[in-house]
Length: 455
Image 1 (cartoon, rainbow, N blue to C red):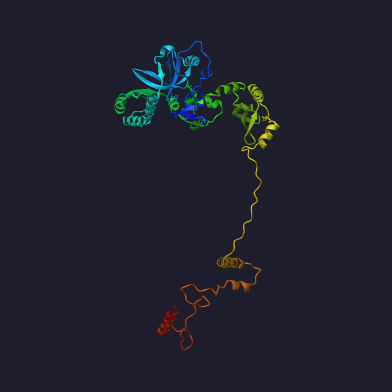
Image 2: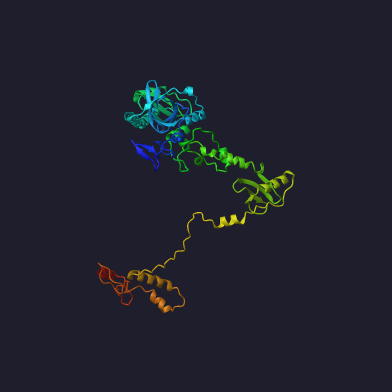
């Protein structure tokens, strides 16, 4: 990807005015800025070697130049790849800077066998772009073939030469892999010369690239070339929690940036006393929690015999004094915490983490009461009446009236007029000769007819 100030030409980024080579770290992987060539200083002792990068800096190597070359840093050139094949790359360094780079990488001139043939023309660039389009489909097919053969390996990247006569497959594996059958199937499928090259997980991340947790491009794909061993001891020296998911990078290994500040931490920790994990006093013991080299204090968990445990900061001088007393068999009466300056306390008290201005309290409006509908009003009145029934200060006559059901209820649709009182009237009952209700068959029939008429 190119930066915001990057211009394009022939479909490729041409850089920020630096003769086609970007110096911001976005256009090329492991890019370098040839400042000596840009200054246009005549070199009395011409160094006829150049550094050429392939596939946007994914791979770099050195080549010899002709006596009369017509290219400069940032130009695409055609190089001799050996065995009659050729490839297209971009010149990244020329002149004495190449001498320093070869000395840094311990690369002798005797190992350089290829030459830079000429500057690439439009047809060479088209062939290179066609080869780049073949790489992604070849990567997918190669992974499928390796899976079908049940090989414990991962194909990370594929690189085609510009002449499309050779393909290099970069893979990662935990151990030795027998890929003889794999190479036969690759040659049958892709019809090119196959080269298998094993790389580590960090080199795989450097070739693929990406964005780290810091928000910047990966160090291994932009400038880091030598990978040193990283252990969890570096995290312990820096008082970082041992969390494997947070300490691991995209390669699955511990982040290389854990070693960047390790030397400073080790130098500062030498100024603090050793073997002071536990300090003894008559009132209780204190255990070391962490060493803060920025504030210059040691935090201890103080556990007095009478009271709850507290975390207190102690100065290195106070720790040395208490440790010297413990070595002599003496113990102080109590361990007193170091008093922090008032300025620090004020800053911690009034420091705004967000940096936002405090807004005034919002005045809340009172909610308006909703208008009661006629149906809701009757229900609420009925509920209020039920509550007021149990009040002892009201006369008993009013309570008896409230308990009566509503007599003037409007008729419901589909119903006829009803009696003013909801209670069912007693049916007429025939009387016997002495005036008492009779239970004869005639009386029962009369009751039944009366109920049917009422329905």
